[in-house]
Each structure stands twice: as structure tokens, then as C-alpha cells.
Amino acid sequence: MQTILGSGGGIGTPLAKELIKYTNQIRLIGRHPKKVNESDELFPLDVTDLSQINKAIAGSEIVYVVIGFEYKLSVWQKVWPAFMKEVISVCKRNNAKLVFFDNVYLYAKSSIPHMTEDSLIQPPSKKGEVRKRLNDLIFTEVEKNNLKALIARSADFYGPDNKNSPLTLMVAENLIKGKKAQVFGDANKIHTYTYTPDAALATALLGNTDDAYNQVWHVPTTKKRLTHLQWIQLIADELPTAAKIQKVPAWMLRFLGIFIPIMKEFPEMLYQYEQDYIFDSSKFENRFGIKATLPEEGIATLIKSLKSSLDSR
Picture 1 (cartoon, rainbow, N blue to C red):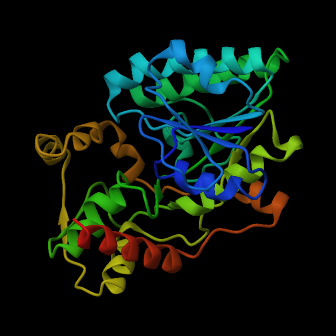
Picture 2: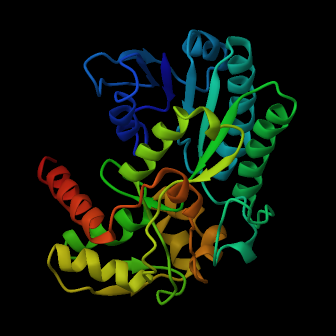
Picture 3: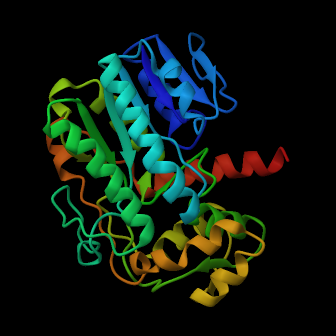
């Protein structure tokens, strides 16, 4: 049994599609899980109810944690550490391997212009401090030989079924609606994005590769060094429409947060958009010979998905 904690999201859904290549015993855990594959086993659960985690994971060989708790600092500080401690404890009890899908928030600000698996861990934000704590919880147990685990780390991502990406929320959806694309930070800086189907493919492959465990892997991400403006132009070309832009200062993000709560959480992460942001996945590519989807192809799929979603509303 391979179990996904956090099914149904931007990573959970494509991950289930990939895991069927390795097993037809897949358990999907979430508030309202829906089958992705015909043979999927559904396990409805509010994962903040830690008393049910053991029952949810029992019998699993591999547990994938791809859950996205509410993007709010107070929630992260309260929920993430307790949740991860319980998942680790239950994995140890059931002799299950753990695959944690992570982001780059724990890396030092100075690492952002070129991130590798060996980048300095020195989070410059409070959200980053939470992610570092999760990393430490996992590798403390790994180093004690109490747990077999790996971290699949991703850059900011975009793709179908991913509703909370700034590239989707502030650029693609706005342009589709005839509004201006909103950008923060320096729009002339490079920003590499991970395509969610690539991230899912890599996470499934890593989880089913025994010698990939007990280390960190960057999932395949484009090597095209596109600036924010170039990403916006790709989206505009695909629609097609004019690439009209509105620059959003930090104070406006807080104002927008009145209407779109997630926006209130972005200001402390602005450092990632004020310098080049290059996510290097060479380690994965060299080991497995798999490269990232071209941005033009990924954007085409994203726009097709968004149009379909908006048309059905």
C-alpha cells in the first residue's frame, strides 16, 4: 500500500496518476478524497485530528506527505510540527517509508540565486523556520536509523489543479479575465518554476527507488532562465492577449489580503522575488535522465485547464 496524505491538491492528484505505474494499492487521504484511479482506496480524514493518523497510515509501505495546510503563518506554526511528529511516529511504528514534498523556504536568502540540495539552510522568514523544523524532525530520525525517508523539494510551482500559485492567481487568471497581470518584487529577475506534473512524476519515482532515500532531491525544473516578465509574456501569448502589467508593492499585498487572504502572507516572502531565483535540479536529472517540461508546453496546459475551469463555473 502506498498512501498519499493530502490527496486532491495540485500535487496529490497528479501523484496518484503516477503511482499507478508502481502499484494498484493506493490510499488517498483527505477531507473529501476522490478516486483518481479506479482501484484507489479512499480514507476521509481531517488530518489535524492526530488521533486518526495511525489508522490512516496503517498497512502502508510508503507514505507521501504532500498536504498543503492553510497558507497562514499562525496555522503553520501550530499545525505543521505536531502533524509531522505524529506522521514520523506512525511511520516508525508501521515500518513505513516517508516521502515529504517540501519547498525552498528553509534556504538562506543568499542561496536563492542558485539553489541546490547543498544550499545553506538558514531561513530568513518565519515560514522558513517552520519548514526547517520539519526538515530537522525528519533527518534527526534518519540519522538515528529510526526512519527511512526522503525529501522531494520543489521551486514555486504552476500547473493544472494548482489554484494557489501566484503565477495562476495573479497572472493567468487576471489576464484571462481581461485584467492586468499583477507582479511583485523585481519583474526583471529570473524566476524558475516547477511544473506540477513533473514534480509528481519525480516524487513517485523517488518514492519507489530504494537508494533515493535518506537524502534530499530537487524535482525536475526548467533550466530556461526566464524572468517574471517573460513568464507573463508566455501566458499572454498563449491566451492570446496583451501582457498588461500592474506592479504590486508590499503595502498593496496587505490591502489585497482583505479580499484574498492568501495575499497577506506574501510580504515576508518577497525576498524571493527581488533577486534571481534559480532552482537547480541537476542531481535528479543526472541520476534518472529525466528533464523538465518546457515552459511553453506547461503554460499551454495550464491555460487550457484554467479556461475549462472558468467556463464550468
